[in-house]
Structures are given as C-alpha cells and as structure tokens.
Length: 303
Image (cartoon, rainbow, N blue to C red; front, side, top):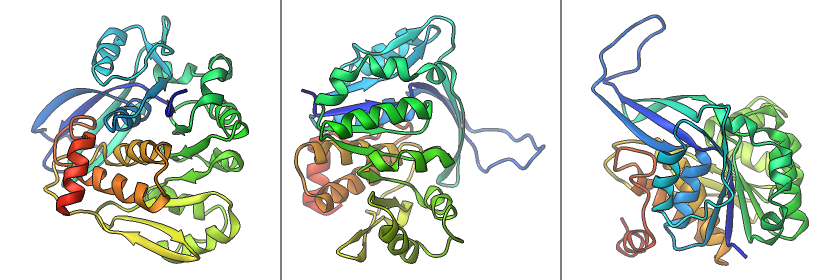
C-alpha cells in the first residue's frame, strides 16, 4: 500500500523573470530564463515524497520530453512505474512569468489531456489501496471523478486542489474530503452560491453548506479554515521571496503527506504552511521544496 497517490499533470515549466508584467500588446525585456520539470501533479508528488512518504505519481507525459522529466523525477524516489508516455502528444508546458513576488501562468495541457477514465480505471488497485489521493484540475474532470470515487469508496482520504479553477469542481465535492483553493479560486467557488465577500465570512457560509473541509491558502496572510465553527488562520512565516510558483503545490503535497501519516488536521496544515513559506526562497517550483529534516528544523526554530 502506498501512503500517497498523486494524480495529475506533468509539465515542462519555462520560467521568465521580469521586472514587471507586460501590458496587453507590450513587449518588455526579461531578466532571466530557466527550464524546470513541473506540473501540479509532479510538483505535489515531489513535495510529499520529500517528507519520506511512499508516493506514487499517476499521469501522462509526451514523447518529446519524457526522458528528461522521468529522469529528474526519479531522483525524488517517486514511484513512476505507472506513468504513461503518449507517442502522439507533446509534453504539457507551462509558461510562467515571475515579477514583483508574484507570477502569471499559462498552461498548454499536451499529453495531460489524454489522462482519461480508461487510464484511471487501469490504476484501480492503487487508488483503492492508498491512504490519501491528491488531485488537481489540470487533467480531464471525468478521470478525476472516477479516481476520487474509487478512493473514497475504499475509505481513503481525498484532497482536491482546485487549480486551475473550473466550475466542474462542484461535481467532485461529494467525494472530496479536503478542498484547498487559494483566495482567487475560493472566490470563484463562493460565486456559485452568492456574491463573494471577505474570506472569513465566506468560509463560515460555505462550511454550513458543504460537507467538504475547506482550507484556503492566502499567500503572505497564511492559511484559513473552519474549526469548531470558527475561522482559524495559521500565519505564514516571514521569508525572503524569490519565486512563489511552487508554494501552493508544496502546501498540498506536504498536507497529503502528514495526513497520510495520521497527523491531525491542524498539525498537517501548520506543517504544510511552513513548507510553503520555505519553498518560495528559491527559484523553481520544486527547487525550494523542503525535505522533512529542513521542515522539522524550521518548525522547531519557529522560522
């Protein structure tokens, strides 16, 4: 039995550092260019595996960059034996612009779009045996529905990171234990029910409507969730920000890892929040993701 299964995207990330974001129709000069292995699925799997958790990554990669991506991920001690290489599709690609401690991202799905129900059904044994299933919205919704239904029916825990946000997320909630939107995604979720307001009020409102536990990541403000009918916010740790690209993925991977280990929710959220803060200190979504040892040290020292 694996402790965590991550079902999601594998991408080549192209990161451009810029002094600011260009306006529509404007060309500006960038400061730096770098290439990284990414995709929310791959990133979150790496974050989980670095906590010493047995982690299986499920997904598809294109023929063009398969060797590069799988060789890089193999160094993270991930189980990649169920990754499928699509011969007729390019690898998913993310174009990331980094400026002013923030980023914009455009994703071309490529082979990720072929991660379908048939592929998921072939992984049924893994999905019904895992302690925790973690997914995102960069692969087809029907595949996610099938996977979450299988794991939930087998009494596993399920975590959905609703990014990039799609309205179909509502179709998944019956089989989702924990939903982890950022503030923008959370506002879009609230908008299905009423005009969004402040996060705290909206969290209480949705917590009365939904059985899914909402955990809202809020960047420098920390992480908010409802505990005993009250909103609790765990503050972010103060760090020197280099690249925020992988903060959300780090949070989700570490959250899954510690829930799989049996940590209570608040402890898992606290550790995930510390890990997310540490991750932004280096350039590249996976580069800054902390190991268990680094995370334990930061927690002990109150970083």
